[in-house]
Length: 219
Image 1 (tube, helix red, strand yellow):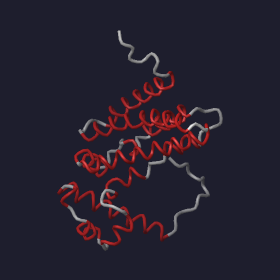
Image 2 (cartoon, rainbow, N blue to C red):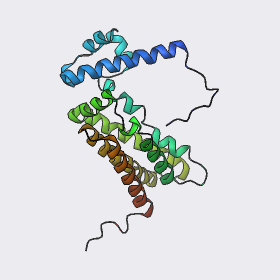
Image 3 (cartoon, helix red, strand yellow):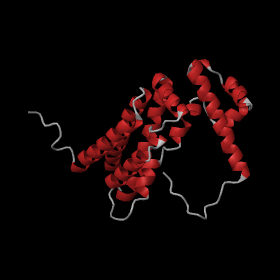
Image 4 (cartoon, rainbow, N blue to C red):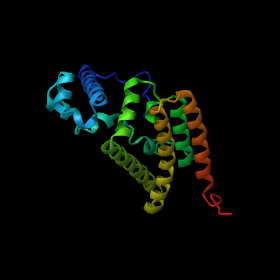
């Protein structure tokens, strides 16, 4: 996640705030309609009418119908790559992503599915129940892995090894988040899920850090 710029950070101007408010209104209208009637049974024109904007405005803010659901996820696409890029000197990529993920879990961040917001929960269920959204979510995960691999390759000069490392590092985050989202969609208590997510994330990164040479040795 991007760090705050400090107390002197520039406050968004009126135009930017209005744009954000319009995007939020469109997103809320879309989610409400999708949940009520199903993703495939709602048109963009109906979403525009519910949000009191034109159909063109919807497409100006959200390029596709799928974006209306998955934009919050897309906004976190580069989080892992950024965490590795911004890590302190002497810190490994494993440590950087461990600290980042454990921090998001501790914060109960929506970025890892730990939110009790009604629309956030409804969006999770909608994605899990809609094949086209599941595919799009997977595509976003692949893009996030590619961004991380690019950062690692820039530092090490080894593209293939960077891709191997990125797949494993992103795999931890994806596996933990997928479990969180599945259980949140099923209605399990947030605190119980968060405790398990913290434990599993620590164990997964420990496993990754030690390597897989002693893992699943057949008796």
